[in-house]
Length: 67
Image 1 (spheres, rainbow, N blue to C red):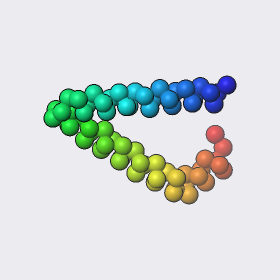
Image 2 (image 1 turned 120 degrees about the vertical axis):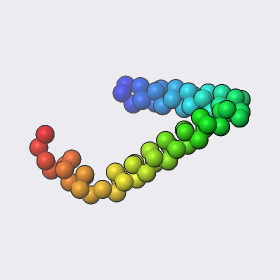
Image 3 (image 1 turned 135 degrees about the vertical axis):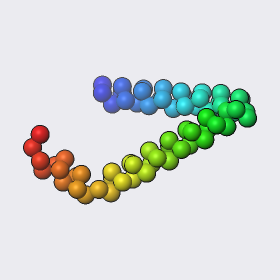
Image 4 (image 1 turned 90 degrees about the horizontal axis):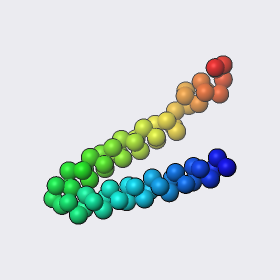
């Protein structure tokens, strides 16, 4: 049940982002600013995600320290 909810939310999120990209492309050249902002946030998100996955210290604390 929980996985189904996550899948549905993921599908809606993808559709929402596609609608945003489509709207920004239609609004060229002003939409270019929005596309640059979204790409910038996306690159920062990927950087943070890669750092988190590579961090052994965070894994240690999440597994061994009592909450």
